[in-house]
Image (tube, rainbow, N blue to C red; front, side):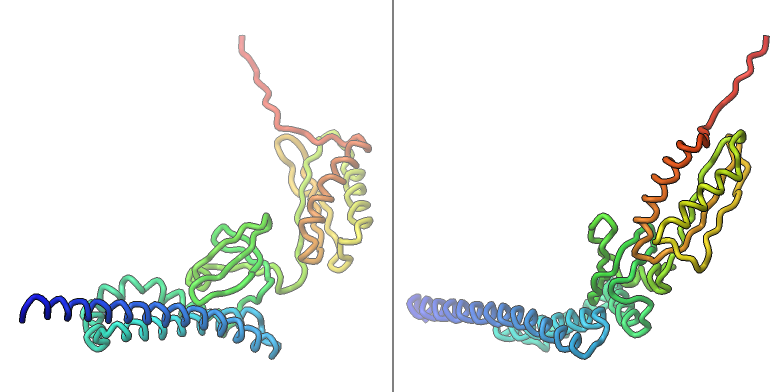
Length: 269
């Protein structure tokens, strides 16, 4: 075989490879686009059936991942790579891959567990692992929370199923626990009356269960008055900030002193 024939075969192989690469790229890109479209249509169809939007998001992301996987395999096949040999090679490296994918598999299984057990739903306010936030959506590997200051927290699903999760939304109401130290010289009864008046005057405070106002502690610098109020979950923080300001202003008007830590030093001669 002379040089001309070799060049002809090489250029023919190169052109064929170029077309195959182009076709494989188009297959994968079309699959990626189709995956996004299928995910949207799936979410829309499930939402119309009045299913929890959290389930719709999870199934939509699962459909997208499956279509992308099929597209990737089809693209590889278009490159005329022996799929059987490729699978055999991956099987030989299965032990290493299993360690690498152990976390992802655990997150996927945990996501399925969350969907079927339904410990929370979209819009619930959760706290766990030092984070708090509102559930926005659940993916096949992660759950997305929006914090109070509008940060997005991405939490692995396995962390949620393996940790203690506090759901503030399930019961619809929360108890607001407040404490205010007052001077030992202050009129305790008057201080309790001020707190009671503030609690009764705020419409966000529920009447049942009734507010609790009592002496909570005899501290080093003063007496601590406690106020336990029940409110709707969505009004918790607004009531908290409003009550803090109202108590300070009311104590100032009534001459009720809020003490600060003091240290008496006695010098020996």
